[in-house]
Structure formats: structure tokens, C-alpha cells
Image (cartoon, rainbow, N blue to C red; front, side, top):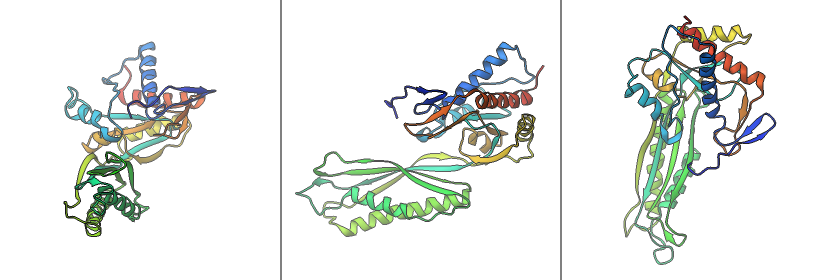
Length: 307
């Protein structure tokens, strides 16, 4: 969030800071590739567009990629797309984009004084009940399907029944069918929580109402492992003595994949952990870091062609 202390702390070859890995490392790798190509005066058969985008995470809802592929001057000119994700030895190729939906669920009610209006319906109780119900919602392990309550809010003071309480929920799945099923069950549970609160307390001043707003929609996408862009990346990885693996994730590549544009996501090298936390870290030890840069650059040049 805005205001978070992102000053980098270094201990040996490790760097600590929120966002230092995801996805600052990939931006650094991208810039290093540009510098290397410029220094070596490499010219390619195809034009290369280097992009650092915004809004990939959370409420950003991939807005940078949506702009690039739907509104930007280059939107109809992009024939292939490579996304760089934080760290990893460089052997993994993401060929499928996991879909997700994000919601802001708002519970509203009449509010009132905590003592004088005691007994009236309370949006916070409806919210708490809704969270408890969601925590027990059954989802399959395969295809992997997940849900998370990431942000909660509401109320104006400790001695007031809130007029409004809300939460933000993330739901993901490896398949569209299971995602839709999870969203359907989630929506049903939210309305059940409202009905139960309206039955449990007085509605003399009004009932609890609910508004389930869609605030994020990441489309699915997939590319066959036999596609030229995937086979080229795999060949480069093998050339560096590694065995390519193929995975699924939610990345910037979701947008081009959903539009039928060949796209993959590569690792940017090195190691790290604790993404999306205040103690996120990466290791910039040279061997693993440089390997990731070499592989990403090798894949790029193999696809673009060298003059």
C-alpha cells in the first residue's frame, strides 16, 4: 500500500524490502538485457518492445497489460509476448494463466449507538458470519482452487453500531469451471450470512443489505507446449544444461494468452522468498542471478532473430 517503507536493506548478497523481488528484480533484469544488447550493438530481425507496466497486482487487475494490448498504439502489432517473473533458476516456463475473480462485499445497515441501539442488526456481525462461512467452504485440491479474505474494514467508532462493514475477497482456480463453482458458492454464503443476521436481531430500523462488487477479473489463457515460442524457450534452457519445466500461474501473460497471442512467463534468475510481505527478500548472488539473465536474453534473441 501507499506509504509502506520500501527502503532496501542489504545483508551480504541478500536484499530485503517489500517488492524487492516481485517484481522489481524482473525490471532490473529487463534493463540489464537492454544495456547488454546496446553495448554489444545487437540488431534483431524483429522489433522488440521493452515494457515496464503498472497494476499487475491486487486491485490493479492487470490494467497495464490491458492497456498495452487493448488501447496502446502497439496493440495490434504485438505478435509474441514474454513476461519476466521474480527469481527462480530459469528453468520454468509458465504456459498457462490462472484465472481469478476479486470481490468487495459491502454489508450495510441502520447503524446506531452501541448501548442505546443495542439489539439492532449489525453489519459487522454479518461480515464476521460471512467470513466464518467462507472459511469452511470446500474447494478441490485438484484442480487447485483457493479463496482468501485479504482486507476488511468499516465502522466509525468503538461505541457505534457500524452503518457499513466490508471485505475484499480473492478467488482463484486452475479451471474456469471450478472458479465459477467457487464464485457461485461464495455468493450464496454471503447472502446466507445476511439472512441469518436479519433473523437474529431486530430489523425495526432497517435490514442488513449486501452488495457484492466485482473488482477484479483475470482471464484464463493457455498455450500448447508444442507452440514455437514454448519450444524455443525450452531449447534455450536445455542449451544451458537445464531441464525445462512447465507451469501455471497468474501473470501479465494472462492478457495476451486470453487473446490468442503466443505468450510465456520466464523466471528472472536467483532465489528469494516471502513475496507480498514486509520481509520479502532476494539473493543477488552472481551465479544464479546471471543464469536467469542469460536464459531470458537467449530466448528473446532466438525469437527476435539476430541480423
